[in-house]
Image (cartoon, rainbow, N blue to C red):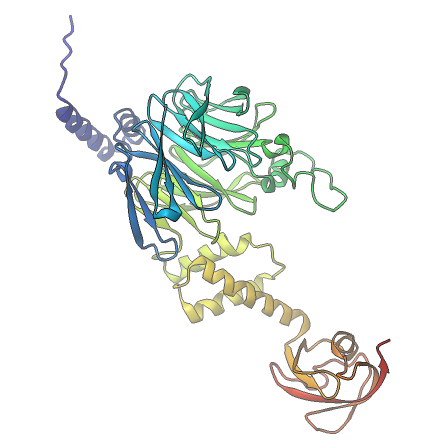
Amino acid sequence: MSVEHILPERQLKELQKAMLDFMQTQGYTESAEVFARETDNEATASEDMSVKIWDSESADFERTLKGHTKSIQDMVFDQKGKILVTCSADLTLRVWDVSDDYKCVRTLYGHDHCVSAVAFLGSDKLVSASRDKSVKIWELSTGYCIKTITGHADWVRAVAVSDDARMICTASNDQSVRLWDPATGECKGDMRGHENVVEVAKFAPVCAHPFLRRLVGLPPLPLKSNGTSTADTSQSSESACQFIISGSRDKTLRLWDATSSQMLHVFTGHDDWVRDFVFHPSGKQIISVSDDKTMRIWDLASGRCAKSIQASDHFTTCIDYSSVNPQVATGSVDTETKKLLTNMDEEQYKGTIMSEWVSMLDLDISEEMTEEAVDTIMQEHGTELEPSEFMDKFVVLASDLQRTAECGHKCRFTITDICEGFIESRADFTLDSVIDMYMSSSNGKIAKYCGKVSVNGEEYIEFDGETTLSELGLQENGEEVLEFNAHFIDEN
């Protein structure tokens, strides 16, 4: 015969906390996380039931939003950044009006257990996932639940919406990823292959499709008449939701063909649960975070991990990419939110700039000019610049260095009686090209050809159309005055 002892809630919580602390200090990572999840002790950063608003540039704290009565599980802004929606273990979703001082304008009720994820379904609807095994669709303007979708056998951890809002995908404790038609509630695909809880699943954006097709050996899509790929548009749900990537407690990310539910590739490298990932805007990479405390960057064309970065001192649970700056932010159960490029020495800073930011630009810049531009900026600013500031300066400087290497230094000059103001051209440009580009006289005539030229009043120099500006002696960023013995013809 067994006797069950029921502890008072306060004592139970204290015992749970003590057990969790013991598991973590002894290194039982997975056991501790399971225990934390099942006893609602998992996210110390969200246990205060609040939302913190931060300035993404300065990392300064701005305000706290309060209203939920249990830990907050997920949040999402609408595309315009005017509405914030949060979901919580208190079974509710809350809608906050950003323009009205973050006022909570609506609370959505309907789930029977912890609400674990939320996303916008178009501009006027929300979709949420819950531990009650359901997915619900809500009308944003009224807060009414207009559809409940069921089918998963366990906790639905995550939900994502395709770019065209015609499909949604979900991830669950039942180790599956599912594809749904939100209009009918019909399950269109059941993807199985993970060996543990699936924490996250997202549709690959169309810009990632060429790289994913290369990864799995599919031929490139044919070009349309305007020269773009047929996948460059998300007009059909088939193109917008062709590929899904998921992350799991089995320590892997997996690529799926959503239409056939076939698993196409497994990304291996993390040493603990994969919690979240985000696509780089170029479509070339995904960046994942894990309980192994790392952030890993994956090259989608090869499927390989290109770089691993220590992201935190504890489980790293979430990541997002800025829509306005080349920055990612990660969240961790050590209660810190971290932004890249902080507290780095010069070697680490340069390495991160070169590998994480410069390498993602589609610029025709040589390695030599790239290195010179990065070194020049660091000589002036050290490690003080954030990525957006650094890359703004880099693009201008690197492009100018590359142009100088290819076409010579910048020449600044004016041409008497032929053009007004100063002209900038490259030293290797010929006079023929300068004439074609700039020589329009102030009296409405064009210099058809020239016989002689003087520079800054010096003697006339014989030349032909192939004579370059450097051969005339024009200096870098000078302000020379050229005078031509020119013959004009009417423009017409």
